Amino acid sequence: MSLDKNKYRTIKTSQLKPFLVREIRENILEKIKQNIRDNGYYDSRVLTVVKRNGDYIVVDGCHRLQALNDLGIEEVPCRIYEENEGDLYKLAITGNIAEETFAKMDLFDYLDVIKRLRVEGYTQKEIGEKLGWGEDKVFNHNKILNEIPTQNLDFCKLYQINRVGKKPTNVEFDFTEGWFRNSGLYELSEKYQLECLQDFVSDKCKWTNQKLTKETKKYKKWQEFIEFAGKNLHNSEFDLENIIDLIENNSFKSLEQLESKINDLNRKAKNKLICGDALIELENLEDASIDVVITDPPYGIGYNCNFGKYKDHITKKGMVNDNETDSLELLEQTCEILSRKTKPNAHIYIFSGWQNSPEFRNIIGKYFEVKNIIIWSKGGGFIGDLEYSWGNCYEMIIYAIKGKRPVNKRTADIISIPKISSNDLIHPTQKPIELIEKLLEVSAQPADTICDCFMGSGSTVKAVKRFENLNYIGIEIDRETFEKAEVFING
Image (cartoon, rainbow, N blue to C red; front, side):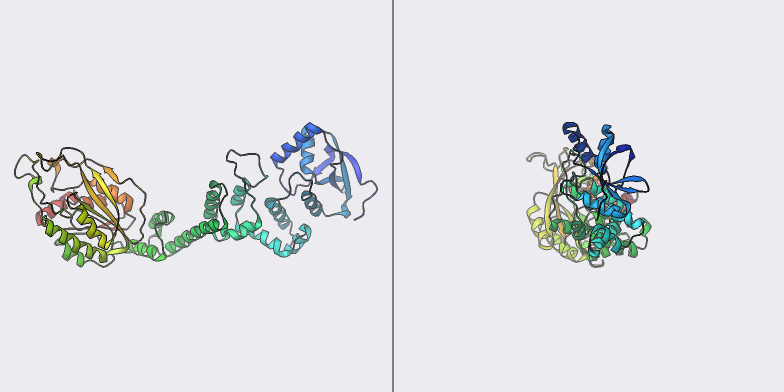
């Protein structure tokens, strides 16, 4: 384009108006001001100005103009274009990508320009002409504006390289159009986009492309699961929040697991207290209907306590099937049945004494994957052989899983809760409700069915009832014990 003979002039800074195609970056502004303080302002660093309707519009050099105004410098050399000699946007962008510019245009600058041109009514083709881009490139940048909410772009902008001054975290990254296009973020909701971006930044923006794709796929799966749950829950107003918590805790590895939980919530399984033989009553239950087993079978040690003062004390009462042969055979048959009655993904807790714990573990391991031996530290007041043994102050809980059901929270495998005073027992081996609650906190999910097939005092069922939206099945063979348990559970 031709320039008039007066194309270079010194103009008062007060007469100049900035044409801001991008934001003023404070860190760049400070660099320019410090450079001027140290070295003065070089006349060769002219501002590019378009004369329009009597105004002087600065299209290249807006950072420098702001620095000059801040420093009180009253005039500056300019290169003047007449209004018909150049498009404001083209001149501004050309200047801002020049080699000598302090801070070149980045993704967010171009997005701001495109957004502004869209508001002004320019078509995608016309925007491309102003930027010197093909339509595909404009389309891809428009995609970011259409798919990534402003709030999330603003978050990224905080960490864009050369955007801001030094941060305490020293986290910087060059967000580009290609990064967004290949990230998978477009398929996520605003909430999950932001969570993914926050995770990315918390890892100092060091994710590989493979890691980024893996994370966005995880959020996409959560999104799809939540949508499925919202459509299929009968009582979504009350149940959906709990389901979302479980989804975001990676509790469901497949849609089938989620669907099973939704069916439980919709069905609202009926609670059962049954007086009968565990082997018979368990067979009467529906297959794959139990989520968590917490039970305390006979240990096979001929339990008898010398602690009670009187011969009719509850601790001196023996238990059915409490010799070694019967107890191990009973456990074997019980585990076989439970392997069919538990869901494809389930948790199993079986109490054990130290005497037969290896045999218990071997039997349980045939049907489930043993994960831990949990120690219940129950404190002093030792029962058992008072003359010849150390005082026993712990019991074991064999924890096993079926399938791939994760825990709600990872907890230490030693639980310290005092045992129940012998004066308060209604069963010789009664467990504290607080102990059962600890197990439920780790394993129970809303609408789960919890089974105790050797119910005894009913501590497991009473603990289950303290949780909202849990179901229970309690089985006890001894009629007298069962009746006492009923009173205890409902008391």
